[in-house]
Length: 114
Image (cartoon, one colour):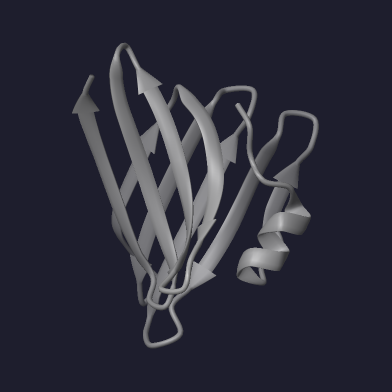
């Protein structure tokens, strides 16, 4: 599993890990929406090849989505948005999660058969 460095997260999103354990490649990043009480807690573990997104509004869980079999995490930036993308390969099913950090915090997750 490949993933961006702490320096790349800082440069792209202006955040440092809220928690980290370098021995297993485990990280937790917290993203807060600039316009409201929405927060995304994004964690991943390189050894377990896992990824989790926890969305909260005003400190209360709205949804928690987790998956294993992560191939890679990538930072995506263009003129319209900045996001973190997780790419999965789950027994022939391609799945992708995208946490859009700016301009407004949101999350998308999908799975498609090859």
